[in-house]
Image (cartoon, rainbow, N blue to C red):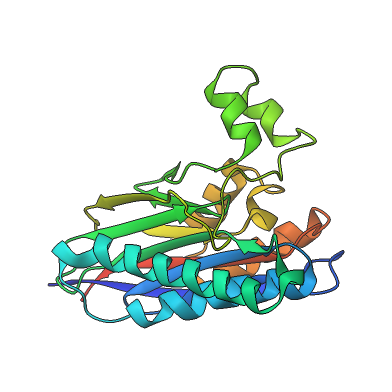
Length: 241
């Protein structure tokens, strides 16, 4: 028996924004979410550039090459965003988050790359754990013990990111993990995580085995909570085949 990755993703404009600046990739080896920023046209472009740069990694990759592959994808995205700003200075300040998970061809390992405030959660044996750390101003305050995680959730500056892919040097975080059969990953933009509580996320992930239905239910919850932002949800299951 070999472990395989099976994924599905969906995105919604939300109830307030005029367009959708999120982008996603749900493949057999790679899953990724990007949330663009910096004005409608530019944010939309930045997330699309990032996704186009990283999507070619959706191929069988040896486990010892996972992190290097993600690093090269992020370097390519950074260079292409820098180029886009050079071509049109009005795009100055555009950027995007990126959270990506790359599964090894052997099924024995996966690697995670992250920059910004989109999130990756792991639901394993009934417990939901946030694997990524938000690159945000409020997370910095939480880390320094100045505010509690509960206060961070409603802080007026919770949307201020401290780093994103903007064409300049960036320090993404990388991690490798051993997958287990039955693991369920949730990757999402902050349009979900800002408005739906973790215990509710865990409940839906536990109760909805069908990936597509699960993603749709989570989007619906974000919309029911006011849908103040674009919302992107990606469900990836580790299964035995």
